[in-house]
Amino acid sequence: MIDPNHDLPEQDQEQPFISHLVELRTRMMRALLVILVLFLGLFYFANDLYSMLSEPLTALLPEGTSMIATDVTSPFFAPFKLTLVASIFLAMPFILHQIWGFIAPGLYKHEKKLAIPLLASSIFLFYSGMAFAYFVVFPIIFGFFTSVGPENVAVMTDISSYLNFVLKLFFAFGVVFEIPIATLLIVWSGMTDVQSLRAKRAYVIVGCFVMGMLLTPPDVISQTLLAFPMWLLFELGIVLAVIVGKREKGEEEGDEFEEAMQEEDENKNA
Image (cartoon, rainbow, N blue to C red):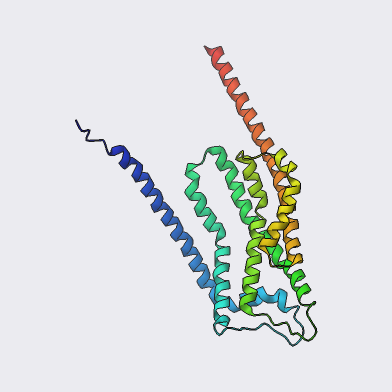
C-alpha cells in the first residue's frame, strides 16, 4: 500500500531551502539598494573624490607637471569607477550586517557572543588598513618613485593607471589587516593551536614577504610596508587567541561548576 504522506518529508525539506533563498535574495537586494543610494549621493562629488585620492601623488609631482588621461573616456570612467568602489566600501558595514542576519539563526549562543565583536572588529580593521595605506604607505611610495627618475623625464601618471594602483593597495591592506581575526578564527575552530602557530613563526614571516610580493606592485618598499604589518598583525592575532581561549575556558569551568551545584542540590532534595 502506498503511503499518501510519503513525499511530505521531502517537501518539508524543500520549503526551508526555498525560504532561505528568498531571504538571501532579499538581503542582497537591500545591500545593492544601499550601494546604489550611496553611489547616487557621491557621484556629484566624483571629481572631488578623485582629487582627494590623488593628493598623495600630486603633492609630490615636480612643478609644471600633472596627471594625464591617455584614453578619451578616462576623465569620466576613472571618477565613475572610484565612486562605485567608494560606495561599496562605505556600505560594507551594512553588507556585513546583512550577512550576519542571514547566518545568525544557525549559530549557537556562544558562537553569537563571539561573532558580534568579530564582525565589528573586522569592519574597523578593514578601514584601518585603508587609512594606513593612504596616510602612511602612499606618501612613502610616491615620494620614492617621484624622486628616483631621470632628470629629463617628466612624471605624468595616467589617471586610470593611478586609480588601479591605489585600489589594489587599498584592497591589499584592508584584507591584510584582517589577519588578527583570521588567526583567532583558525584557533577558535580547532584547526590549530597557539603553540603550533608560535612554532611556525619563522615560516609565517617568510610567507608575509611572499604575500607582500604578490599583493603589491613590484617594488621592495611597498612589499616591506605590507609584509611588516602582516607579521605584527599575526602576533596580535595570537595574543587575541590566547585571551579568548582563557575566557572561554573560564566560562566552561563556571558552567561546569553551576551544573555540579545544581546536581548536588537536586540530590539533597531527593
